[in-house]
Amino acid sequence: MDAYSPPPLWSFAPFVLLLLVIAVFPLVHRLAHFWERNRNKLLVSLALALVTILFYAFVHTGVRDHEHREKLLVGLAAVEQVLHHAVIADYVPFIILLFSLYTISGGILLKGDIPAHPITNCAFLGAGAVLASFIGTTGASMLLIRPVLRTNAERRHKVHTIVFFIFVVSNSGGCLTPLGDPPLFLGYLRQVPFWWTLELFWPWLLLNGALIAVYFVWDTLAYRREEPRDIVLDEIKVRPLSLHGGVNFLWLLGVVACVAVVGNENGWSPFPHAREVLLLLLTALSWFTTPSNREIRQANAFTFGAIAEVAALFIGIFICMQTPVEYLRAEGPNLPLHTPAAFFWATGVLSSFLDNAPTYVVFFETAATLSAPDPISVKIGSEVGHIGAQYLLAVSMGAVFMGANTYIGNGPNFMVKTIAEASGVKMPSFFGYMAYSAAILIPLCAGVMMVFLW
Image (cartoon, rainbow, N blue to C red; front, side, top):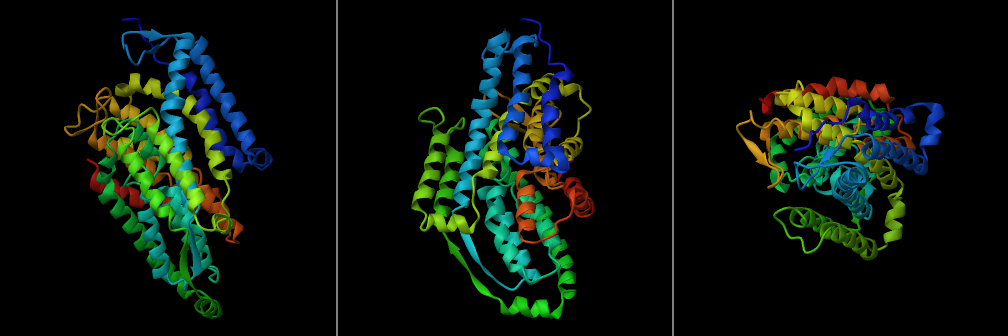
């Protein structure tokens, strides 16, 4: 067997730099304007991806051939394997799933304005926590944020409502299926069984239940501080909730079925990328069968800008992250991560400041090298092996739950913030929002960790 050496640490630079650019550019006034255009995001993303490609083409000593582990691939052969894994196997299924969920959910309009009682807002959060697992955190956030804003339009104290909405609907609600949050879908692409995510039901219930309970107390106190005239106005300006574009729930069920049974190792796969073809077909059916499609999407302020931004950034992320993922496959057993709690905090902290999808992949790969000490393991494909059940639980919880710690931890966070500000809500600054998560979310996550991880 040829001598194999993992990539050097300096080869992580494009990956780290891209994530830092994503985190910092929107916060720096002089760079924010440049960063607003998706074309510029794509140029930066591809430029850093090209650096990684050049590393594999001319510098790296060789990658292990996926079919013949004893063989090393170098030069163009190495680049071809890396790009196939990063783009064809991971990026294309990932972006098509998000595109389908985003587009289909954009055809559902929930109109109306009901009294903004604390129990009403809790009902929105509870509904969002359930929907997030089945139409994705992005889909649930885009479906519910505008009704929440309309319902609370007459109230002055509502910033906390949007913050808790991000905690629950945009993040912690989406962990019961691989559709819920991008990290879990990437796990599914790595042969984690589709229904394994139901193992997260009790952590999901405990954390979301605790968050909604804390919110109810907070909002009850805030409701008592509202001006009487605002409460009267809120009670008078009432329009019953009405749902438009309900046919799209049928197409969303089709998406769930496709992801569950098409294209995975033990499922139905009539031809390569059948799942992605069917997802695009369902998206087209949604577009052409939704009554008053144009009017509904205009009312939802639907555009393809948000999904285009995700596509532009993640093509670079998926290519650049190949070097740290390869390194962790080789060196994972030597890292100081040997307990589920350590994986939970490592994944959670990085998911807070980077994007939780690539963070999940990095620690998933590391945990897969450490499954031996865990007496219970999860099978992840006939050729992939096993991963310790507690390690997988820890990585999944850390990525999904703690992606809510900052505006940049998960894609919907910033989208919700932007929509709220456009509606006149003065949202907290980057660090102001972190004060909420540090005081509320992190202690609750720590409690959930102590209950479910050993």
